[in-house]
Length: 201
Image (cartoon, rainbow, N blue to C red; front, side, top):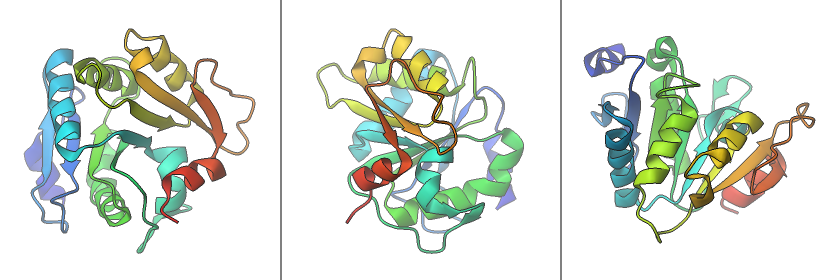
């Protein structure tokens, strides 16, 4: 497993992507590293989303992790999602080799089409930088991307960006963090409401 990630040459200035449509097991060569300018990164991600007809991205921790994992254990048989969606996660470089394969396995089994990992949380190649690059590259007039995120500051920063109007940003509130409410989210919902919205019944 570690060999695949070693060969990818992951740095602090990249996005790691796994095409879950083609993922079968830990030996599946469906991983790639995306590097370049903001425009180049955005165009590559937008092409991947368009090819898979993805119109929703779910953050991992605090969002889809709530049904892909139990405590810190990845589920063997996670519930199925509805729609065409991708998972987006800030995962530090040293944790990608430890958790990347399990994240890909559980997300694929749940029905996600794409896994996007960024090794930075803030700044260049951080969550907002990557999402803004993607939003900029999406074709105007296309289907509006929906993004579920549990960190209110990430939602607010994204919505304050130049491309904030072209994303439907939903703040998913984690229990115990109710006082941290996004000021700019299109909607604020609970984790239970989020699961009701995205899981197949």
